[in-house]
Length: 141
Ligand SMILES: [Zn+2]
Ligand SMILES: [Zn+2]
Ligand SMILES: [Zn+2]
Image (cartoon, rainbow, N blue to C red; front, top):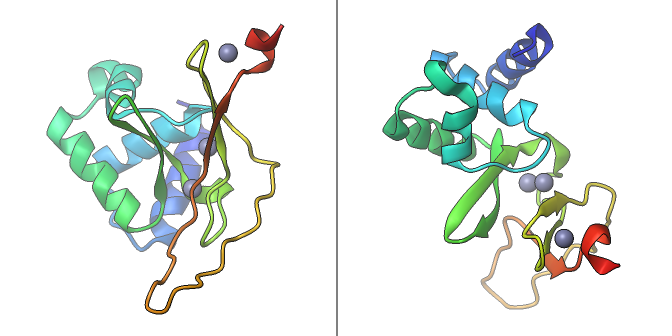
């Protein structure tokens, strides 16, 4: 892990007024290092010997999600994939594209999707999340 990632993780915790604990720092650094959303299991794998146990990673991710530092990006094979929230706006996540041939999911950071307006009385939208599927450039040809 680079010192820059460690600093970024510290800053994120500070901004969210979360206590700086070792599992939170490790999990955040792991998420910042990945260039795509990852599962709890992939975080443990990436951290290797330093990794907190499963329950701790689970609780840490829940705490980071509640604080809005981390988002649940998408659900695949009944497993949530997590990513840092800094590439999303307050009420909308950037879209994700899953290739039906190779299974690869990509973050579409530069795709703008109009925000849905709530038309039903009594419904409040907290977050708009979009998952697209089709063929990636590698599998299209
Ligand atoms: Zn998001
Ligand atoms: Zn593909
Ligand atoms: Zn993403």
